Image (cartoon, rainbow, N blue to C red; front, side):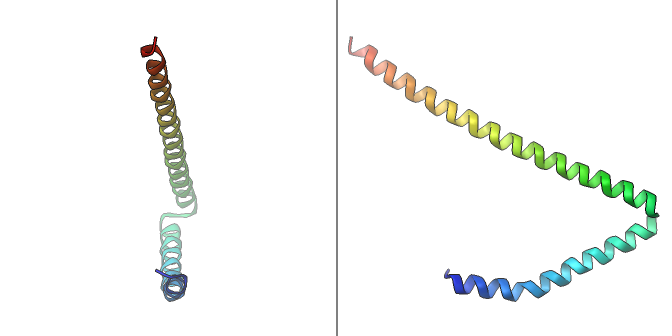
Length: 89
């Protein structure tokens, strides 16, 4: 897929995406005033906190998985080299 096709796709999807985001904002405003400003603000903050926590956990898990994987690779390489030199004795 060439860069021109990707650019055409992005330009074609830009306006529907803007309408979709505007619709979501409109629905949020209706919900916000329906439940009341205080309750709406508190639920919004709780949702933002939940999303931030999930993203932080996902980032931490990914980094931990990457570090453990690299450590395992180094340990296997080290053990292989060690066994090679020990077997030569």
